[in-house]
Image (tube, rainbow over all chains, first blue to last red; front, side, top):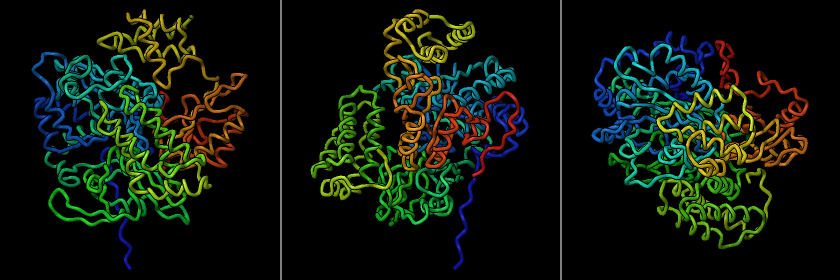
Length: 450
Length: 185
């Protein structure tokens, strides 16, 4: 039998990141043709750049997967108010660790992407909102911005043009909700990050200081640079239609080689990622479940069959290993690719414990603004924790489901869904384990998760 | 409340970066907290006055954001990641080992003020879990035997940021050209 070739990474965003000879200093970036796309951008009209980004089909890499070019199109240019650009570098979805690679190892790539985007949308000022746990990342970005300013790539009269745009690093303070774009904006205004309701507060219309604002993820903004380099139409040929470009997948949990891997969208399946790229499971273990897009995304059971119709009308019938890694693959099996954080769980995992771990996260991170989320997330944590402590009741699965169902769709922001989806999917896929807990009392799992 | 000249200069430098002073709140709080270790009511009022807002506008931030403090952590503050990807790699065990060896429970400060431990939510380095931070430095794959020797090095004050269990990022921050190769996968 001929062994299938291991899928090969295609590194566009992380092209240089792990080259031992590469540094995060501007000299090295310039030697590698850095800032040449900014120069190219300044020879174009801002709206031409927007057109290229639209043509490229590049979708947001932060979690929602909304087309970036479309987001820019929604910008209210008629208000006469200043326009702001914000890079969402809060990277807080459990299982995600891609943006940190870019910011620590190749900060100038982000700065170049941001200044191109800023020029394209006509931003008066740009901010990088970085999570506070990235102490080094903030230092590195500050230094890189100082270097870029010295060379006139950002700040006053960029590249001798009449366009000026300052770039400021802003540190968060450990709150997951700051990754939600309207919460992030509140936080940047110096307030508690309570998200705003949409409508009317679409950032592109009423964002920072009630001015039109674009919020894009780190990886998305880096892609802007590559869209200019490759050209919108050519970029759209990378990956698959509606799933263009590469994605940096972050694999964590119980595999031999967890890590970050950049592939063209749709270039490999979940099975190839687990067994070929990540070296398979730990010795003697079997696959039990996968969370495909950060802890908010719905869990997939290893022995499920998924069938239905794809967007192009064709039928599919997949096992978990057949799911293509792109935006639409995980979505078509009822989950999502989210932020690209793939969490692998093997047969040693007690699913009630894993659930309790996730629930503790959402209970800790709910901003508390909406009652269903504030109270519901806490109750889901309390119930699952009690179950793990040997006091499970046979009605717990239904109770959890009823709490989750009362959060979903009843909150200002998508955190409500992010907190409800794990519980809904864990109960749907692993109800037997929740019911077993009530029958057997406290069984001893091999791994402690709560 | 006394702040060093350096911190005061940084504060003056940070405020005008923003179109509105209030936006500088988190950055100013970070600068003050980095020096004093926590934000007292007196400090709240001082920051509020600087930013031309009310003390409650600062207090509401201190009481919301997990990394802002009303009481100080210890000299060496240890953050252990608790969230699922690290937990799947054994972070609950790691936290227990650190608690035992450092002689302090998570969420607490040791009586002599030397060590404090915080079992934190996702530190966004899930591929190298369990992840532990000591102050601003990140350490990776701190599990089982590794966690034991990591804790021993910490107690003996022999933990070397340049080599022991260190994350790639610790080598990237210096002003000099980076020569340290990044960890190969």
